[in-house]
Picture 1 (cartoon, rainbow, N blue to C red):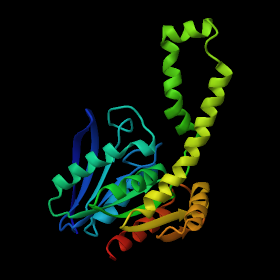
Picture 2 (cartoon, one colour):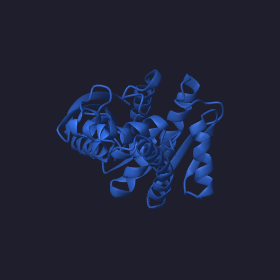
Picture 3 (cartoon, rainbow, N blue to C red):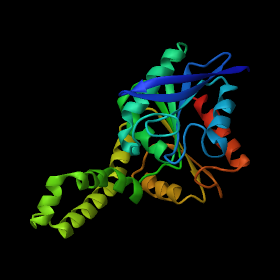
Picture 4 (cartoon, rainbow, N blue to C red):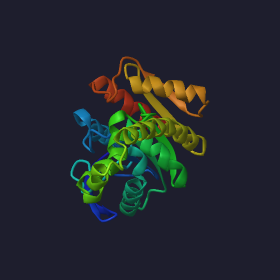
Length: 262
């Protein structure tokens, strides 16, 4: 089946975002939106998302991949995976506008992109399925410190803040302890939110896990502990990004076969 690519530029809360749609010659009514892991963008590690999109498009599945705010070629400030609902909503609006044949969508995410997909899905009835690749079930120290510490770092430029320190009105030890407590609480909250979100999602869920990825091992424990309804597929020895050709092809085949099976 022939396909074409369409480059996109659209807006989310005043920031210009960049994306690409792989359009099949005879598109199915069910499309796929791809959310990359935080360190990557729409091209993906080892061009994984490009190759995945092409593989699915030749099966008739329209695929859109995009850079959310602060990533790749898109404008805006970087943000944690649990604060990108507006990015996903803006991308879906653009996707459906370009693909009038499309009636519903599956969101595929890798790592914290899978986290974002799972948190968004229950609030949008057009999302009928999730493909979660090595979902990041807990916030990393870096992402938590970035989101929580930003407020405290910003205060370093405030004259009033330094006056309070000079007057002995700021307990730095207590502030540091409070920040550490906030970090612990936020890291513990994300798994609960994810489990609740998946429990509240009425669509289909496919979880693809790399046997050598620590995030996948954590996801396996949490999904089993909370009896999350999903289909789980493990690719033995695969790493977090499914970096080898064989692993990429297995992810593409598994995802495509599952998307057209229901």
